[in-house]
Length: 495
Figure 1 (tube, rainbow, N blue to C red):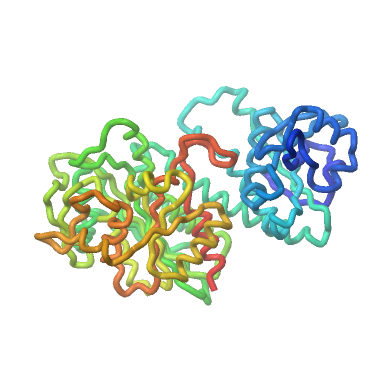
Figure 2 (cartoon, rainbow, N blue to C red; figure 1 turned 60 degrees about the horizontal axis):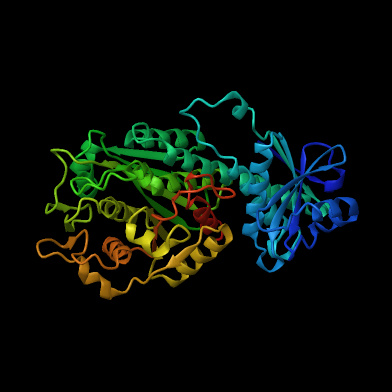
């Protein structure tokens, strides 16, 4: 889809479906936005007479002149936010495509709640483009469905002095959206295609495209080098594990970030096998790795002035005659030993090696992302990422980035009192508690054991947010690509 930004007014648009925004009233919309829409009194009355109320993401398609106008509800004035602008654009784009339109014309909304023109243009572009995402590479799509596509979107801005700012916002959004789409494609891909080797090859291709440094350490070498956490998980699968490191290093970088991603391309649970219900969804257990790859792509494309090291442990967790067993003890890259009480608590084992490996880059900030615990889904559902860190400043920065992108985080305690539950009688650590209590926090306490010496570290449990069970305005059912926009905003705002 081509995106352009022009100075103009909706009433002057001569091509495509024109989109108006409406605020919700008690019985009908209070008014249409932006203000110049009210000059067309006949159209305003047509909207009010249609039964349309202006509730958030409500739509009505009406004739206007020789063409069509789509009116999308924003909800109540008191609830307006940048996220509602994102949802407004996503709802408009999906509705327009479903109705067979090829060109969408959207206003760059000027309400104070939305912020500056660049911010609004970025949100609108993100919402529209992300809403159109489809994973249909592996199925035959009927011709009439293939023909339903948006070829172009025009953002109209009233004031010429805001044009440059709005264009920059739209351009930034295009780079971020491409990164999110990459993550979604990798997550949605079935595990017989998206194997650890596939992820490694994808990282190599990304490095070649964006001039990044890429190092891939294969399974045999991981065994020799002492990556015991990764090797323990990988030894039950016929697909060899891959340890992937990507590096983006611009000149005069003002900070170094290490992003660690859990890349379990399929998680059966291993010998501690999962129930069969919805096990097919366990292809999304590499969502952390996908987010890291997406963030690397965005950072390089946007030329962010920070050094970024992406560290991914890619493997399957499978049951077989060679798989690790409950009761086994493995030695991690750090030298610490772990008693494996449950082979389905494998993500923390591979991340232990990733976090220790990150220390060699002396990063200013380390963030790991993982679909780590079912306990996080129970605690926070599908709306919030579990955040655990002892660094107050990093917590605040992640919270700010989460609010701006609507990839919101909710902080859980990382108190020392939770630590003893991860101590083993026969090894340095155990990989699960024997009580099952505070599963999300104790998993983070396990990871904390491998972060000694790091300046600032945060753990993000994305188990509940990485996969959507229903369609949302700009998140189709399936892979969300969560974490990409959050990480980009964190790095972009770093001071």
